[in-house]
Length: 71
Image 1 (cartoon, rainbow, N blue to C red):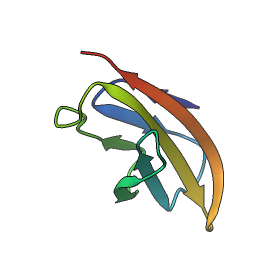
Image 2 (image 1 turned 60 degrees about the vertical axis):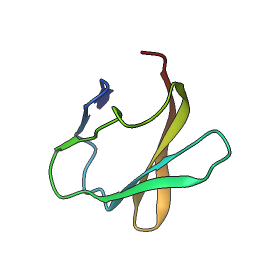
Image 3 (image 1 turned 90 degrees about the horizontal axis):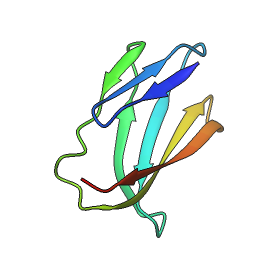
């Protein structure tokens, strides 16, 4: 299960290695080495736009999703 709000992402899908945030052009904005089931992400410095979060396990994407920031 994965749940997201604008500051937290909760992961309970086994061992995760890396979480990547990219912009609409797939430019990497942030790489996070995941060490906890709940990781705190700060989107407050990002402009209103569309972002993608990709979750990697053993160098393979296991989940990707889109976040639309509009506030």
